[in-house]
Image (cartoon, rainbow over all chains, first blue to last red; front, side):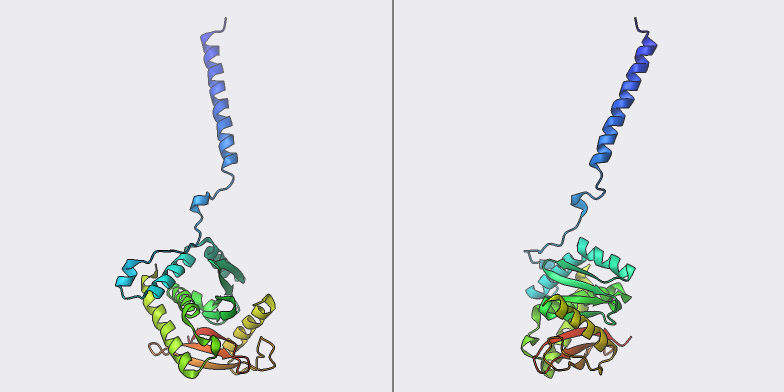
Length: 175
Length: 68
């Protein structure tokens, strides 16, 4: 007949073995360290932020701000930030918008009309404010520019003024 | 816009951001050079946009820049 101490020993061994098995299963299940829910994905918002409307932004302007927020919060944009740290060019499509970091570009941004997108140059990273303004500026231009039919001096002056103005105002409410 | 055309525009942007007077062919291949025009922000004159324009085929793109 088994002594009580031996029985207790066997019980402990069984318990430890069972716990170890469960832990190993969990490690395999947890092989992906980033659960899907933690990956932010840029999404187009169908609702207009009333708070921004009350601040005097038009509906189109609010949509641009919301698109910029979606870009900034996206996993793809994080890839561009990593590329900037590494000094490497990188391209991402975010909600159908082509955005490329180009370290050789000595400017903050460059509109790419034919691509419905824009480049971010190294000067955009001189400050967070400039980065935000560049994104807003480029989105505003892509949304509102009528220069595809040719650029007159008056049209250029008007569109430049509007884009800089909007970027300056919207940057204050972006984050 | 195909990849080759896009790369030509990027190259044009880099060169004209560095030197607006450089002779840069229109990326569209229309046997013309891009011209540039700087337009300053009236609120902050250190900021400006540099328009890169082909006067033959009307292609254009724009750089956001500053004097700093």
